[in-house]
Image (cartoon, rainbow, N blue to C red; front, side, top):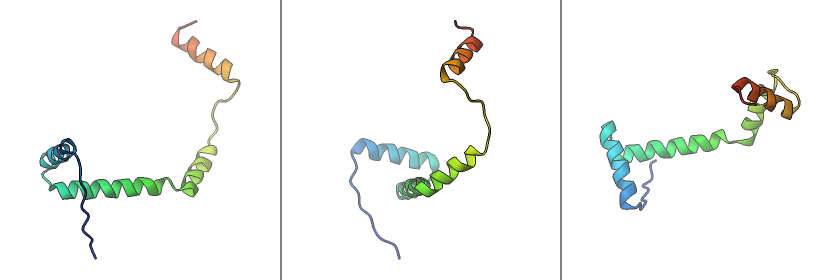
Amino acid sequence: MSKRLQIVVPDDEYRAVARLARRRGRPVAQIVRESLRRTVAEEDDQDPDRRIAAVLRFARFAGPSGDIDQILAEIERGRGTP
């Protein structure tokens, strides 16, 4: 079942959405629905368990490590700055 959603936006925001809809050859309502879906999907991606799992996957990779001051000095030397 579908539900109707009514929102009020400032004129300039509506004009921006309407321009985008015209460029894409789609109705304004479709552009808004797609935006809502993306927003909900992004929020789902922020689930703490998923974020922790991503960090743990990344932690398997080895990379350079060491004293931060030394690393920054090496970076600057590589850029040719004293």
